Length: 496
Image (cartoon, rainbow, N blue to C red):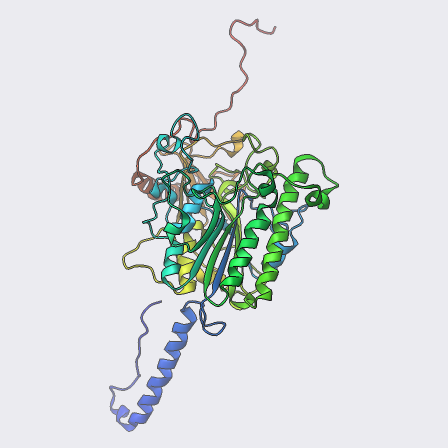
């Protein structure tokens, strides 16, 4: 907030001599108290529960579409616990991840930086994952640099005990550091260099949500007297999905892939409910912020392992995983903390990005950022108090690879969201698309020809940002949407 200014009107006038020093003191103390009230209203949410700063439980689902929860409009899925989490807190409809795939979006959550600036463009592979060094071939590092500022290190330095359980996916090469190098006190992970669980084990995949969230509950029990941050990074609903007959029972009226996918969603919902109950039992309900979100949109049927988990719903949006259209980067985001966050709120106007996670959490925790740090995200903690606001910085994306799936989902390489506008384009200025997202969330009506000024302004900002990114290889298919249209074979007789 701006500086608080004090003034006693009339003190410089002749009439001011009629008032006693006691009156001036009383006025000054009154205004000082008013200023203190203003400061406390904008202060971190740590004046609750005996002055303790809030606890954080961040549940991150994998490939979970915006529409994969009943409270987000799904008419078949059973998600009573996530629905209750939303009813007891706030639900955001315009939340975005920083990338349409896993590792980059997770890097943004950790660092508050756009992942393209960190050279993390796709998933961080384990050499040799293929015949070539996939990370090097894509101009990427083997892991997120632990020297980069991270939300867990900042919280640890502020007195929090930190933990991470589940899918890491920020580097699992032999030279990759363990999660502890990022300011994480307690960790048990997969897709990392420690591999405490075997993610290829069908039993683990079937019960991974229960195992991961049980570790979270155990950590919370052991650290309930201290402020804590714990991230539960789930494997569901990423393929391959393995479900038991018992887990499929709520959907016995369905057949095939939907029955399997819906069962996996509901088993996660069940375990989230168990964790919510445990937090309540420990007396931490009023001062613990629970957040549920996803790393990117749902996968597509064309992906080799996606026969079941490609059932995921992007809601009303065009695009899926690997696409910069809304369905690839727009995700569910629910937050609950009865002592701090108003209940029953739906925020349809705030544009929330993955890069905002670090500055927002640190603001709520009272964790100070080092002087001179310039993040891509911004502090949106006011929105958790139920006060929607327009962000001051745009969200920016780059996707250097082919977009999987149907041609309708294949987006340009670059995108920017600022206010109501979303502009997509390729670096060579081809495929310029402008959408009024609040009025056209499905991105069907390209308004680029009707609003040249908006195109000019947004494209200049987007291309300037892109020009400053680290250089690296780009797949030839990136940003293209060609379809193999039927052609008459050469030399074949023509029809009469």
